Length: 493
Image 1: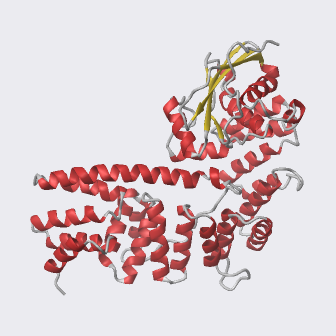
Image 2: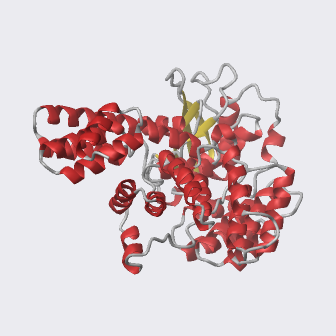
Image 3: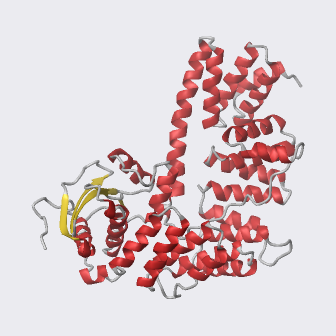
């Protein structure tokens, strides 16, 4: 078998940790090889991990795709690939392509160091499709040349090639029936290929087939490397089946072995759904513990605030729902729930603003109010379940993506605020209001934007609108003395 070594290897030294492998491009556009793009990324990631070089999992990569709104089937530019790498905390991104002609397979790859922006020379490996494990194994070895792991050790984790192909086709398929067909075939070929069972669990769960999902995932042996994930997913299925005691016990046992925010979050959801007085404690305590372990997950903050609301603790709900929207300003449900809680506390101006923002973000909240006209209520069943466990802190895409999104939103908000100021100074009030509303959409608690809106409303004789805007400006920043002075003039006590 020919190996192209004419090009200098990318890694004369040990590669950096945290590799992100991007799905490879199909250079020949050969239709029968469509699955090899994703297959290349999964296989090379597996091989790098086997060699002791941390590589980011497919699940984490897909989360980053979703949060950045990048289509998973699209070819990525280098800029997008680098952006994805930054989002998931990678230090090096690997991009590549493959050519498939008959049984002939040619694989080309480059590494990109994110700290220096340096791209390696092209790495090329040749072989046959039937020998693709060896082809990608050699490629991984060239990226991590100093690994002491033997070729035999690296290949121990590979399933039969036919099963791997069916598995990749299964996770790429969109129709549930097609997913089921491919994954069933993968398990028929290799019953011990338990990664396919995990994927099958997701298919059943997406279809609401929780009993079938539970049955599939229970077949993962307790001594398998995926056992902890399988036990966690079984707990999720039991929760969805209202088998609350069993679900709570499953999550609790896993958490005793190794605490995890997803386990604590889901234990809180169990307690939220169980009848009052059930053993195990209050839901609020579990969400609170989850927040201590994971301080950037807006969903957990929402669950905590939501649990306080259901517990009729209005101030507790307000405090934690504010934290949720700070971490995810686009969370329509959190804005609505916060608005309801503020209304119940008598903070009408802030409540109106939060509810209006929720309506701008989604029509669902307007439907809630239409179903319950005049009612100050938040629907049941909004709690957010976690489906991933043991995501390393350094790879936790929720943290990294939230931080990246917040940074982008802050930059965009600052841009619109500056434009709003210029329009205000030029007395172009209509354009100023449009820019300032964009600012508030991106940064709901930007006091300067609310102050300017108040001043524009004052200039146009809209006293009540000015009062509402200035109240929010003061609420957002109690040190905003100009807003306080204007508010005192408009609404003297």
